[in-house]
Amino acid sequence: MKRTKHVTYSEAFKRQVVDQIESGKFRNAFHARVSLGIPGMTTVHRWLRRYGTGTRTPKRIKIMSLEEIDETKELKKRVRDLEKALADTHMRSLLNESYLEIACERMDTDPELFKKKHATKLSGPPRKKGSK
Image (cartoon, rainbow, N blue to C red; front, side, top):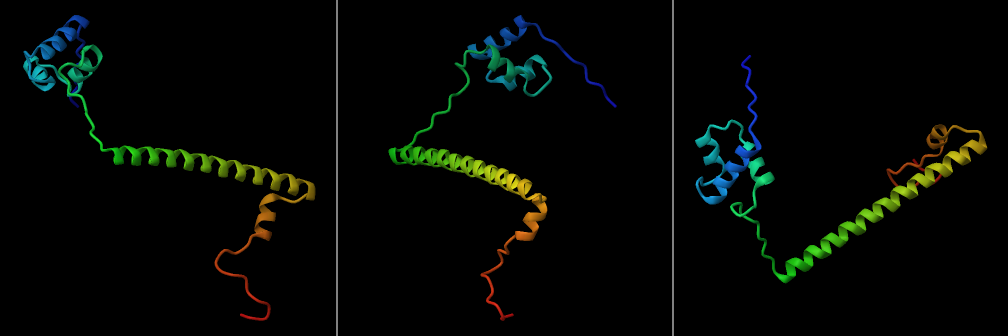
């Protein structure tokens, strides 16, 4: 098995590389990495994020119409409402489970046995007596 050697760079060197990229000496992080013989695909990118001013890294600009902005706001509101409804339903379910445990405790019955005995079938409507 081939062992790779771990290289540690000084803070001054890291800042120098970032300054050279931002001043335009290197076209991009890849070009700097290859020119300086720095192993690691993301090493120089991490240095840029940590020490760079962001002047050479492109910013993302998202252009949206008013309808898209309104739709985005509505969708975010709907997600918040659905998350709240889910939390409420979860709390209701926990309360129902607690009520069932208390009732079964008072009736001196196991909750699992009670559930099995009184479970309703969800496969269809209830049958009338005498029909198959």
